Length: 404
Image (cartoon, rainbow, N blue to C red; front, side):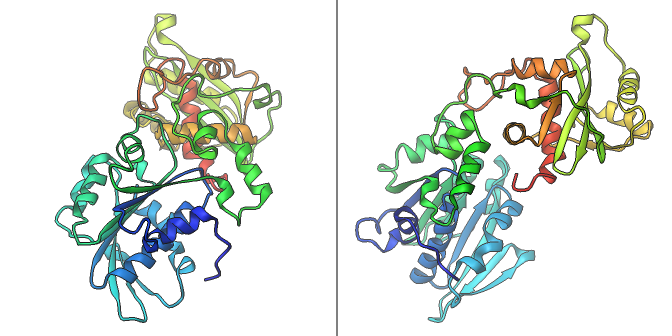
């Protein structure tokens, strides 16, 4: 491996366990901005520590899912670690077996902490340490179960994350109480990543705004408040470009509004060129699934629609669309990821909204965070076009725009 020059924080994150001042800490917490080198330095440190201090022991490496853990950490391990560590991956068993020239051999099990039931995956195992990548995305029950399994003498916990809101359980239990928890807290910024070129750093700074800028760029644990999107005139277009592909995104409503948008897509660029918006409560008439299918067919008139992306809860409407011959995809309904992607695509010009889409433009100016809630939650009003635009970004554009 070729090591780049490390910042003081990166070096500390990797080698804190060798320093007399910190070596007796039970845990290390690395938080802060994206692209700051938290994961790289912590992963290197975790393997160096575990291989130097133990042999014949079991360790856990945890992510939100096994897939995200492989993508963010495991596929890079051989490039990050010294060449004298031999790494054997048993993919079917979700584990790594690592050995060194001193004869030390340890086993590293991979776990995904997706939901509240995930804690059962680690029950019964005895661990000498655990690395939890993006720990704020994991439920508290899973993290506490992993922590409880680290019962070998000298075991340590390694946490890294980007900040969330100040009421997040991990912030309140571990970050704010790091002294009480006997944990070392290291706060990172993008300035810690010496290998990040200035123009790349500036590009990331331009990508985000609002709460996402405060969290991902400044690395702050702040509340989501005010408007979800800072919607500008530059996000609106008067052009209706012909697309290489066409998609329709739908948020289904009966008495609540039904919103559908027609997207013209070429490469990593998309324009929402037309919309259909019907508020059954306002018009005092509820539409049927077949009438909504008629509206979707009118929106698609003369165009070959690749897929209709639909609210996954709208089972009867999905079936009606399929009977009409449409290819239907149930939307990825991850709210916060979808909002983040939509904000990035708007700011970077990957998506634009045609001026004729008046209901979508109206909702962009009204869609707000719920400041009464301690978790990141949007107010469920003026959100129907917002939901189907988010569906489109989460389900289609994320595969067309690199790095999102």
